[in-house]
Each structure stands twice: as structure tokens, then as C-alpha cells.
Amino acid sequence: MSTQKMLAGKVIVVTGAGRGIGRAIAIQLAAEGASVVVNDLGASPSGEGADATPAEEVVAEIRERGGQAIANTLSVAEWDNAHEIIAEAIREFGRIDGVVNNAGILRDTIFHKMTEEQFDIVLQVHLKGSFNMSRACAPHFREQQSGCLVHMTSTSALIGNLGQANYMAAKLGIVGLSKSIALDMARYRVRSNCISPFAWSRLFGKVPTDTPEQQARVEKIKQMTPEKIAPLAAALFSDAAADISGQIFAVRNNEIFLMSQPRPIRSAHTAEGWTPESVCERVFPAFRPSMYPLDVTANVFSWDPV
Image (cartoon, rainbow, N blue to C red; front, side):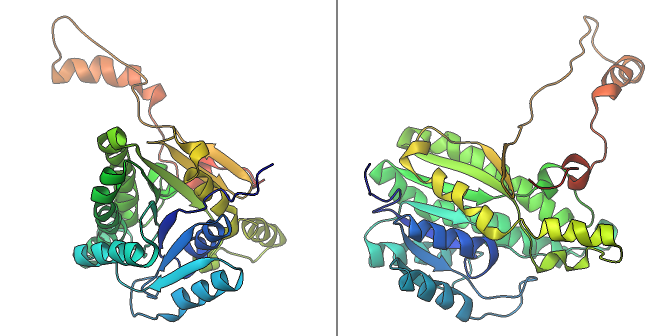
């Protein structure tokens, strides 16, 4: 059996790689032989401040394990920064093969209290940042006739959550962005997929732990470490995934899911054409049993993580 590492020779940028899921993915990619650009602004969860330390620490850890990595602390929310990140990868390692669009922030607020600034900044980092990075790669991918993008979405967007209109809009927008890239760039053998990760983080700090049952639930949630997300991300960059594009995956501890995408599930037609009255009388009653309830993620993923 060959000892060749799965991603040997590939150069991959991971954004938001200083902590959590991005860090775990960067370390996994390097372990599989990739040269990694560890990009992280070093901001707080809500996007304030900057600190080069997290990115530098991940680079040091990768190098200690015998891998290749450099740190980058530019914000992906800016077009010029994204192009510079890709340029630095090429200067340092000679090429660019992929990006993990993981960088993001939270500004959770119930919808009727959300400000324009709270909405704009979350979309700027998540959605615009993912576009900026993907677009910066596109000319290089086209020229070399290869490339791979992995974007982080969320079940908050795919299913639902409370108080996250900005985050949900951004993360569902990323799904559309990924599919568009997959379609537009397929002729150049470029692939684009999404991962919806479940992982324990400090954001789970508000989960109640007042009762033994609640404490047991939190302990099970803690099993969903960022390291559980990394193997799928690495596999998507491999040659074994050369025919996989435009898909949405979810990872929940030791479970991997292929998520559905919108397709027609019911139809109604009439030779006479519709009126508002006939829609109310015929379409709504026929469709109502198949309409989706106002679920949140916990309603759909109701069992303990495996």
C-alpha cells in the first residue's frame, strides 16, 4: 500500500483557522500532506479586535508535527485582502489548490431588534468573505484546470434557529454561492461543496445545566469536537472526491449526512388559470399537509449525537 499522503503537493488556504473548526481542519490538511495558509484575523466571536497569536500558534503546531504552513491575518471581508491572501499562498508555495471558507462572526439578535450594522457585518464576513476568497482563486483554478472550495454553512440556515436572521441569511447565501460556483466552474474541473458542522464551542455556554438531564445533554454535545469535522473537509480535497461538487454535507460527531436540496414536492394545476380565490380554496388546502413546520435544528436532529 502506498505511503503517499492524500493531499501531498496541494496548497490550501483555511480562513478563520486560528481556533475551533478552522484550526482542526488546517491541522488535518497539513497532516495529509497539504501546505496550509492559516488565515485568521484574531477577532472576538462578534468580530472586534485583531490578534496574530491564534494563527501563529496553529502554524507552530503544524510545523512541530512536520507540516508546512504560514500565517496570514488579513480580513477576508475585503476584496483586496482576499486577493493578497491567495497571492501570498502562491508566492510561498508556488500554487493554489483550494480554500476552506470558514471565517465568520456572530451578532445574534431577535429580528425586530436587529440593526442594519448587525446584519451587514455578518453578511460581509461570511457571505462576502466567501465570495472574495473564491473569486480570488478563480483565475488560477481556470488556468490550471483544477481547484476545490469547501464552504461552511449551518443547519441554522438549512433548517432554522432563533435570533439569527443575519447569520441564517449569510449561511444560506453561501449554499447558493457554492452551487453557482460548482455550475459555472465545472468546465474547468473546479469543485465546490458545503459542510454544515455541529461542534462544541464557547457559544454553547448558554445551554442550561441545572438538572442532571441537562448536564448529561451538555456532556454529549461536548463530544462534537471541531476535530470531528476535519476528516470530511480533507476528504473533499482528495482525488477520491473528483466527481463530487455542488453538494451539502453535515457532520455531527461521528455522523455524516448528505443534506437535501430544494426540489418540488407537490403541484397543482388548472386549465382555467388561477385566481386568488381558487388558490385559497384549492392550492393551500392541498399543500398544507406537506408544508414545513417552523422547526429549529433541535427539532430535526432530535436524537443524541452518535
